[in-house]
Every structure is written in C-alpha cells, then in structure tokens.
Length: 86
Image 1 (cartoon, one colour):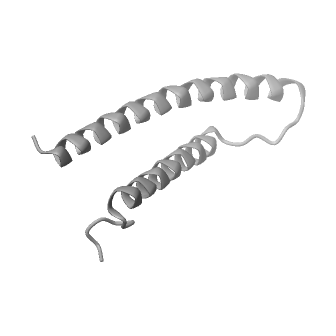
Image 2 (image 1 turned 60 degrees about the vertical axis):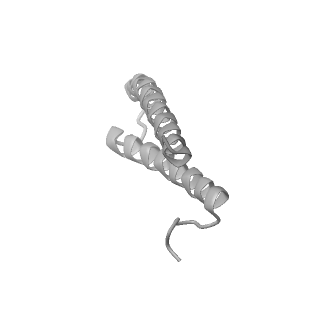
C-alpha cells in the first residue's frame, strides 16, 4: 500500500467517526430542544421556531466547519486549496 493511499484511508476513517459522533450529538440536542420547547409553550406565548429550521442550520454549520478544516488540511499538505487545480 502506498503512503498516500494509507493517509487517505486514515482521513476517511476519522471523517466517518467524526460524522457518526456529530450525528449522535445532534440527535441528543434535538431531543433536548423538543422537551424545552414543549415546556415553554405551555406557560407563555413565545414565538416558536420550526424544528426543521433548527436542524438544517445546525447541520449546515457543522458541515461548513468540516469543509473549512478540510481546506486547511489540503493547504497544509499540498500548498493548494484545491489540490491539482492550478
């Protein structure tokens, strides 16, 4: 196995672990948000935000940070933001 292939395998492995961890954390946060939102809506009139919007924005932010880390990693290893693109 070449060193580059080994490096790519390690990067893919750690990325898969990171995505699995963030998905599990996101599910926990979603359950917490639902329980807090239901308690608040019983006593007071509060403008509620749809669950789908909260989910979409949180996921969007996490993937944006993952992309930023990937861009920094590509720049540090190859000196280019998009490797192979001049």
